[in-house]
Length: 201
Ligand code: ATP
Ligand code: MG
Image (cartoon, rainbow, N blue to C red; front, side, top):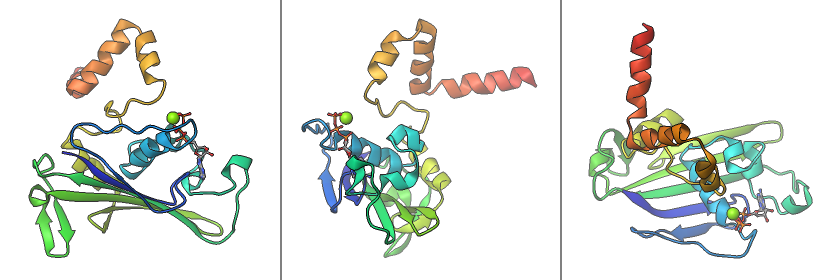
C-alpha cells in the first residue's frame, strides 16, 4: 500500500485546490524555505488523524484553513471558511483487507478496493468549528480510519513519519529510549504493554 495522490483544498498555504502525485518507491519534494513542504506532511497527518494540532504546527484546527493574512498574524474574511485534505491510497496489493466501504456500486470489502480515499474536512462557522472524516466519500468516525490504517501498521504512536528535528532527537536519546522506538516500530511494544497489564492483575 502507498499514497497515490494528495488533494489539498484551502489547507494552510495551499489556497487553491492542489493535487500532488506520489510514486510507489519514493517521492521527494523540494522548494525554498517557507514554500509549503512541511505543510504537505502536515496535511497527511491531519487527514489520517495521526497527530494533535501541535504536531501539525497549529494552535487550533481552524489555523489549518488557508488564511491570506497568515504571515501578518491577521485573520482575513469573516465568511464561513473550510479546508479539506484527501489522501488516495493505492491498495492494489490488498494490504488493507478487513472492513467494508461504500462506493457507487454499493458496499464493498476493503480488500477488493484497489484505491481507497480518506478525507478530512475542517469547517469554521461564525461561532464554532467542525471536523469530518470520510472513507470513500462516506462519513465515518476517526476510529474507523484508525482501524483501517492499523492494518498497514500506520498508527499515531508508530513512527511512520519522521518529522523535522526527530533525527537529532533520536540520536540524543538514551540507548533504552531508542530501543523502545525500535520495539514500537517492530510491533512488539504492544506485547510489552499487555505483559505489564497481566503482571499488575
Ligand atoms: P522549510 O524549508 O523552512 O522547512 P517549508 O517548505 O517546510 O519550509 P512550511 O513550513 O511547509 O515550509 O510552510 C510555511 C509557510 O506556510 C509559511 O509561509 C506560513 O505563513 C504558511 N502558512 C501556514 N499556515 C497557513 C495558513 N493557514 N494560511 C496561509 N499560509 C499558511
Ligand atoms: Mg519544513
